[in-house]
Image 1: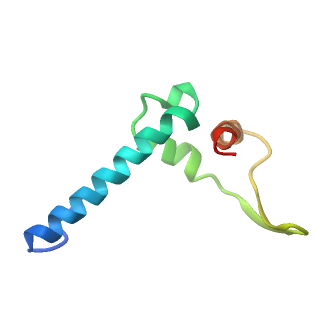
Image 2 (image 1 turned 120 degrees about the horizontal axis):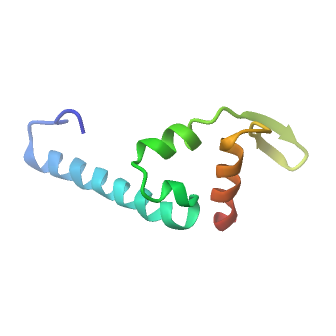
Length: 86
């Protein structure tokens, strides 16, 4: 929240509560979905190392699928994160 979105108090309060909710949800999802080294990391670390992973969108018979890089740290983290979600 680098800047205040409005001059109206209630708009700013609603924006702050939405940001707080998003922050709490991400921290709550870190427990079951991320490896142990991300449990105490700031939110920027998983964002940079996992969410910003380049991928390709491919078409298959069953519909679109994503193809992650075959090697690297991101693949291990993605597989670990997707296991409890599935």
